[in-house]
Amino acid sequence: MRFNPTPTNGRTAHGDTPFGAYSIEWDSAGNLVGESIEIRDPADAPPPNRAKPTTMAEKAKGAAALLRAERGKQPASDDAVVMRTATCEDCSRNDLGRCMSASGCNCYLWAKVRLANEKCPDGKWFAEERVGD
Ligand code: SF4
Image (cartoon, rainbow, N blue to C red; front, side, top):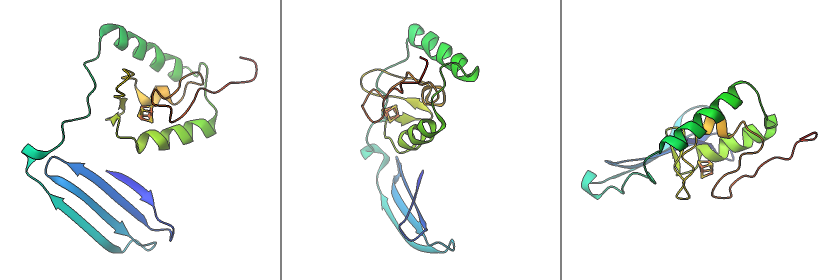
């Protein structure tokens, strides 16, 4: 489920499941103001967005990135982390916190958005040049 703000300080939630897509809207006071549900046969659901299985080399690279991010190595700026996180949260390639880009990233997004030299494989955000790097 994705939440987005509305221009009037309310919020909307959108989701897509094998059983259908839904959209819900609340006003700024939290009152329900609209909903829509499109019910579908699970057999007609689009295939999950999984590009390919993860290789051992990718797992090792992901583990190394997690360690660097956890230890604060090569940190991205706070603004970049916020912007990258918001972009990834809205991205259809985000599969439970892993980037399943067709170009083969498969990265752990928690770590990826926190490392200055990482970039989105689909060009939605870029590496950061840090002073002193
Ligand atoms: S890194 Fe790019 S492609 Fe991957 S989930 Fe984030 S925005 Fe989407």
